[in-house]
Length: 182
Image (cartoon, rainbow, N blue to C red; front, side, top):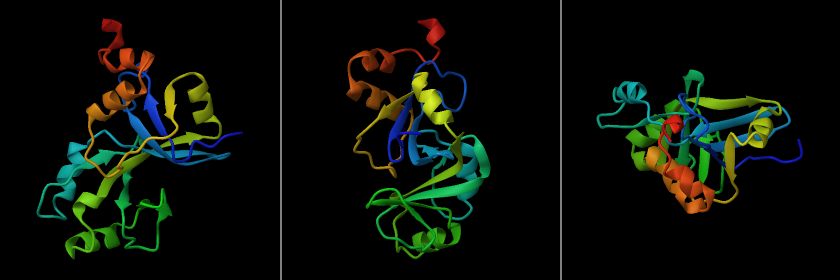
């Protein structure tokens, strides 16, 4: 491995269809010689959202982080660190699995619910798997992208990023979800 995609955004190409990665925007949180770990930023999980409503007395969105270990919950938090168990993503955002401290901090208004994004599961790749998928053009890597990871995003995020990339990506942005219909 010569290059790390840590901190980069992966945009699925239209060739991926019919699974969780179709039209996905993935934040790569870790990438090294052992593999890669990331979270899908734009796939809402209505079933998990309903379960989380039991913790709060207001609506909250939970996202599918990926197909691996869907029983695990991850939080991307913007701003104040309310736990010692975290991994820094950028100077503004961090990742944690510390559900107790996050829920407590939201309920005590130490952090705003708008400053967190909740994920069920994650996206994982074995050693060199992500590199091979990128070489096969399964993913487009966005080197620098100014994105608030805690914003409530849906499928429009994929299209918006594709449009901003321009060129051939404009064609992809406007392609039907089932590319065989094209």
